[in-house]
Length: 250
Ligand code: 1GP
Image 1 (cartoon, rainbow, N blue to C red):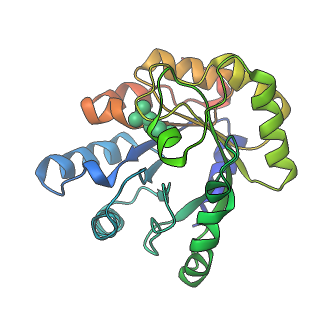
Image 2 (cartoon, rainbow, N blue to C red):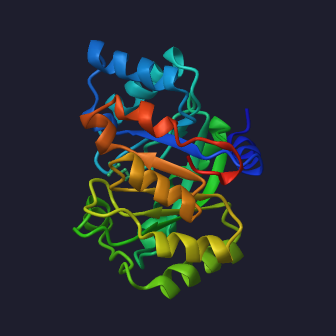
């Protein structure tokens, strides 16, 4: 299965897509976790994203192996560092932190990973990763030693996304940071969507159906939810009701 083609086909059909973020660092493979995964699978989520800022490598591999073996939902790697790659996944978001000016996260980590990714024959989706201020210092900003784009700097966000598109990126990911106080502003999502015809992924701080609905309506193609589902996995059932055709939001 080519994951990028699937994303594009969903967009062409007007289908809004929901990804559940799993942070291996917070996962213990036991009954609760297995039940949660089954719930997500039954609910019909589109993707699992897996990765985190600080993840122990062996444990990361164990969690990916488990998921690849036990569930049918496409598994997309969302790495916080170069070692978070695994051949059992369906695709890898090959991220470049284009909102920052730290060469290590623009290209350094990618160079460290590239040969292994090639050997694994992993599908890569070149993704412009843009950190947007979510009302608190995010782990990503701290770990990468970069600054988020201020919430009101819509032009900077649009120009950054445009530059990424001109560099050949395949997707744009606007990230408010895990556990953000506020998700990415809808005005920014609208402005980026208007200029750039690429799959648009939005994550960070999405806590309820209303926020998800507003973010989809503003132009997000995929939303990514982590913390809110860790706290209340059943929230997925409400979120899935937002998945409808032709961008007509219920
Ligand atoms: C994915 O970092 C987000 O882009 C996940 O954020 O944990 O706040 O949902 P939350």
